[in-house]
Image (cartoon, rainbow, N blue to C red; front, side, top):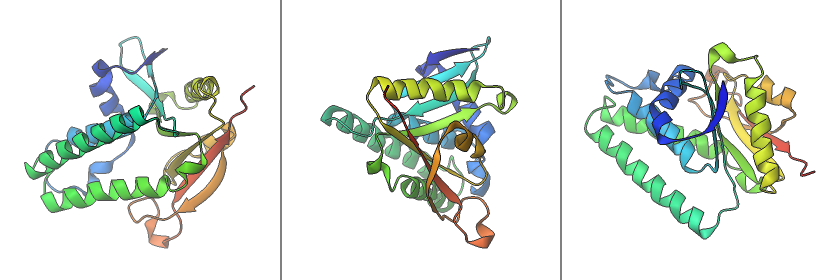
Length: 215
């Protein structure tokens, strides 16, 4: 295993890892090109990230991902982010209209729900210096120290860039105990009907933060 910076050649491998981790597609009807959905999600996370690190195996297959942002945007970064966000939105809309994600109305509704949950998770973003936009370790490697290693390297990135705090959002289906063991603290919670355990209508989204000592 080794750590590398994300390159476009790893896109398909990253998309496969995302799809193996989450099941965003379950509510889509008659979709026949589901990788488009997972590519859209992955690229949305990548777009706002300045720390883009992968864990790859001896076959050059992606086995872990950690993408993190610098929340204090420069004009250059802000323009770049917005341009790519608009382009990505047009790209996914065209695929929906062409029927590649199945029923058009359902696909638009489900993609909108992804956006809604992300907005709820980022509602306190201005309070923190960095966001972990995407963090995945392949199922077979969890508990083997690779997640901690990815996180340690991200914290090193934060220190190098003078970022004193970081946050992320997750839900009840994820292994959020990892964050608690690492030192993250719960900042707040929220509810969205597309997240886990919706039957109780209790908060099912979790926002964690980490104070980062710069020395």
